[in-house]
Image 1 (cartoon, rainbow, N blue to C red):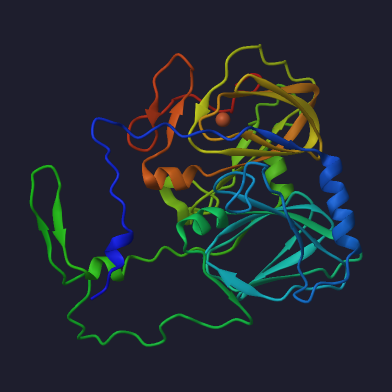
Image 2: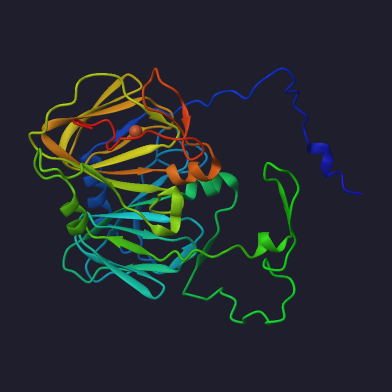
Length: 367
Ligand SMILES: [Fe+2]
């Protein structure tokens, strides 16, 4: 008889509540550090799998290599004429081109990227990269791999593309489908009983790889004060539906505060359980994060808001352009997206109760 149960511990939790989580510190990765790593990756012999890649790891990241507990960022370099080997995994990615030009190949799709174009690569799609240009192609790639590693379920499959789709249609006479499965109301408040078919054949929402060209994004963003355009836009993937993501885990926003915008008044910030990571690719400014002031300039990457850290951003008179990644859709899916817009105001659970109205910018001047 198995003795596996002997290893189980029982922990008395009577008369206690779960503890609040410890937060990681915000951290700035200076442009010079990123630049030096791009140089190093450009000089090493071509790796066998073609991937010149370095992970940006927070000093508090111990078990897995993340910039935050659930987000990994890789600096990826591909020299002219190089291509990577393909693979697929059950993490999903957002990619920002920061230099050069190249092509992302995702199964039967291909997307050419130029500076500040953003692409997303869905989970479990065979993908690879090629540089057909004549300069180094550099990308920042954001993934949710650390969370999957913590859950013990990151699945990686090397090699060339293979189809895992079921090729045969079910027989027309199939009895066990969600259309014919039990679906029974058991309470006036909405509790139901459903057959197992609902779990194994959930409705499919197509999730194609997508690209947001910077030329299109930039045209929607304010380029001079008072031009009536927005200072921030969401890069929306319709597959994420009401969770308003770029992938099912992350949203990406592009923001631009034009030069000469009125400065934001000093004051308290806001906070949310989603983590925020800013890459500043033009301009300069500073952020106040849990009482710490961090100056930033073009090329700096900033873990600008560890989840539930109070933060506010201040843009210098020269303006700024910023890509922000947050694990907002993931939290909406878990009903854990709590948000406190005024530090003395209510804590709202976004997605389960009404959110802020008339709110168009993340604590920036004029918003
Ligand atoms: Fe924020």
